Image (cartoon, rainbow, N blue to C red):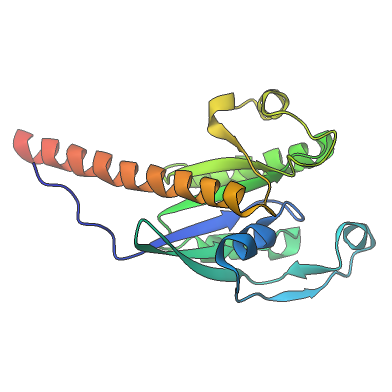
Length: 192
């Protein structure tokens, strides 16, 4: 039985709402990144953070000796057209939600519902800010989003071990997906 050769690289998009922790996640995993941060202009957003991504964040790291290219999308609504641009050629994605409040989870649900058009791609939903007192549990987030709890993963984007665990799970899902596709293609060839 043939197996797929190890991919020469993987492109993973890191997406989610404004202030969910996308840039922090990529910085934690990769160290030095290419970012396009600008000062926040909205009064509401200024209460959350000073700077925001306006085009994309980029970082590179190796997992299982495979180069992983991480592309972080902007979270502000006016820049969300970049999601469509950045998902071209992706192998999978990480959707990050701020789990610190019901309001933030609801914001995440709205954007995730839009991301379901990319559901054929392997992905995980990471619930960030699990280190903040009063954060919602995975069970609570599961109920709010109407998603099975086993599809949710806890994340502390500032913690390297937590962030690397999320990345490793995503890479495993992508590699498993590739093997399933290969098996389906082989079965189709035998039936023809």
